[in-house]
Length: 432
Image (spheres, helix red, strand yellow):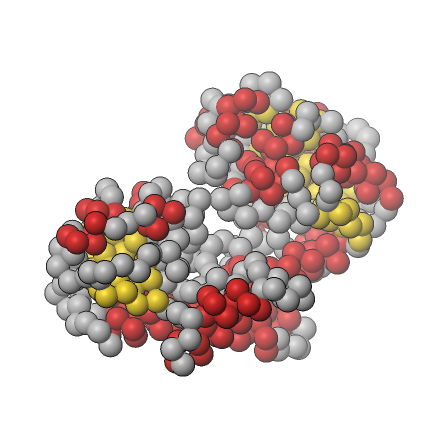
């Protein structure tokens, strides 16, 4: 099929490259000329394992990029994969989606025949039909359900494993009102359905929108619950990881998302949980469990800093921060736990030096007001440090050993259960 994707960020580029790999003819539409040039040159604009290879393989053949929205007229289906950032109060900001939908509508005004518009971005229930479809109607002069159709197809991609998640999904959700939309989506995803054990869920548009929030809300709550339990374990001198290993044997609980530590970050969990909380409040319901999940998550970095306060005064001292990305396998630093940790260290007067395998440049770009020293290796960051704090669980941190001998004071606080205990260091785990 001929597929167009509006937006070439984390989701849009991944989906485009993967659909091209499935055999579709894919056109990415983006207003950023540098991103368009990168894709057409066979380079991924984002850091994601496996994505560079797919873009390089298909660019110029089944994958191309353009700044011209008119290209969508030559396609059968358009996926909207634009940012949905948070307002100051946590509510979803649909400005990018509305602008993209309006531009898409202008292009569709001159197209003969039907066109399916699929919302891929995460939007609160009602957004597709009440905001996005009307924006397309206004500029296209067409009516939803006649000149074009709308559908919802939420993404379940994890940074660091996005390509794998797309090509080997657990579930594929189609949200639509008419059988024809299900049929078209089924044709797009047929290669995946045929080659995987993915469950296909056909549901309404609002239900599809909510499924994404329910998915992320449940996982965020699970992370905060195990962190809450871990905090209790710490107070009783109990290893939370041994407790987690035992409860994971219960198939009602399972072992995933039971790694207690400094909390979740990134572009999805914080944004999505806050957005659905605000959307719920707008309808008159206060969601106490989700609110508690956010509260526990926000307190975890402070608990780690509190453990530091009990053991050292870092005023005027060098402190190493290991990890800047919100998780390993990505250079995404949005809502990373490194920010509250670094800010807390600076409030204590520490001289912060940080190291991350891939996210240093991204962190410096996103947080220009945070002035710290950046090291080229973990060893360089640790040399002469009065304390070290592990924030991201990169595998290379698990291999650190002799590097700790160069510390001025070998105090190591681990927020991710990644550093190995060893003689010669004072090791402090956050919940173990």
